[in-house]
Image (cartoon, rainbow, N blue to C red):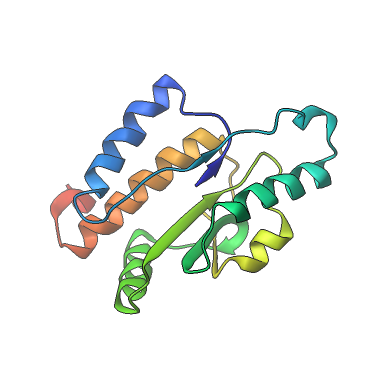
Length: 152
């Protein structure tokens, strides 16, 4: 799940490729929450709050929410694979990875999240985060299956 615009053409192909690859292991879909129409007239706090409300409407009580947040825990690729395997071992039905809006994720959504994950201390454009997330999830799947992608 991601707040923001649909994929730019230069990102779209990569996201679609990795999404297709992940779907060989797990069902996968992207939920894109469109930016608010009056976003420029809202304060940062109000914008995050309204985005948070939209996000929560798209989450079921059974979803295991992983919020991508700069204050979250970082994983190695192997660590992410182990994290995903642990959730599978717990019979977690849906893992939902959330990329917030331009100002981050509202506190109410962060409180709902079972895990906070930081990709890096660097700041990336949201669409690049989608591509990085898709690639890392595919890499984790290949690690779990002991396939050569990780070190090819």
